[in-house]
Length: 245
Image (tube, rainbow, N blue to C red):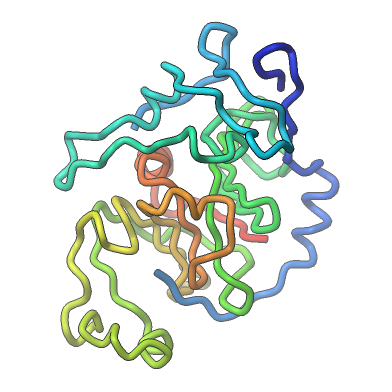
């Protein structure tokens, strides 16, 4: 992809062959955790970029395209503030790309090494979202389904997490969990991942911590920008298949 001034923007998507090879090596482990549609860029909407790989790499300023995508959502029970997307590596901003996964349309694929979530679409395309993932030792991988979805969910930390962080006991299931809101770790939406009818404790969810996108920071779940999880929530039904590698 080309940015302003004809400079090439690095595309970090994996090749289909490499993607599938990586998927075959996936292993499962215990987990625990904490808008408008997009289309292909046109010359009129394509934002300008600084040179990739430099200390000042990223967007040079605002763009109407991303202002619309990441602007405030005031029609929510807890109105979402605008995201300062200029502070995020533009690689991780929502965009339509060539599908690198080879999965069937309608499938969600989380590539934890590249920090991307793909929603596979028709005609060899995919919607790509930047994500934050779990730290080493708290990750989960495999095939499963989105068992159910929830807007503005409560957050109930798993027993294992409470054991590590006793201060979270006040949000335990016995205490009713943490109520929804802008400070809730699950953000504006959550998609709950089940495997063989059992809860994996793995979630796709929103987060106000926009600087965590593209990094391994959470305790196992896949976090998206709140505006991105709202977009994804509207695109996928329950029983959507998901592959995490």
